[in-house]
Image 1 (tube, helix red, strand yellow):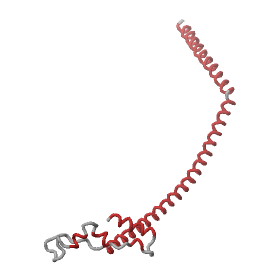
Image 2 (cartoon, one colour):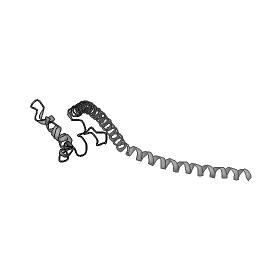
Image 3 (cartoon, rainbow, N blue to C red):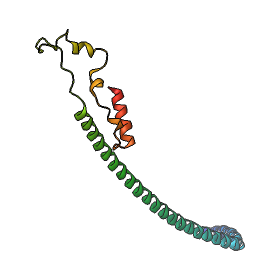
Image 4 (cartoon, rainbow, N blue to C red):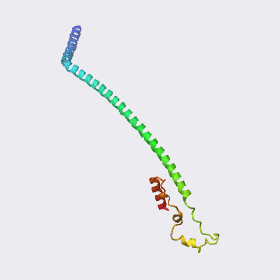
Length: 169
């Protein structure tokens, strides 16, 4: 009897396992049928993904081309800016040299500064001397400075600058 019980138990176990297998096969069959049914939709999805990838590649290529063109244009502008900067630096250096020359010319044409009052002055140049009393009303440099702004050989801008410098005295 023992052997019959073992045989029946094994048969029941085998039936249960076959039932589970059949159930699993049914579920798997339904999923495969759904996959086959959605296969066309899946193919369309893959095609859409491929097209989107191609569009993205073309957009990246256009972006690269555009960025290269903009980079070249920007480099050209930078080069132009550097050239303008160099020109301005040259003009600034030249203007500084002209200003230095002009200042030197003014310095050379300016009468020497009045001597300071001291006890060691020669006679006739003391506090009571007529020259000292005459110069009290006007600044000494302005009275003796020739008017260089009226020379016809000077450029109008140079004359204006000289007038401004004389006005500062």
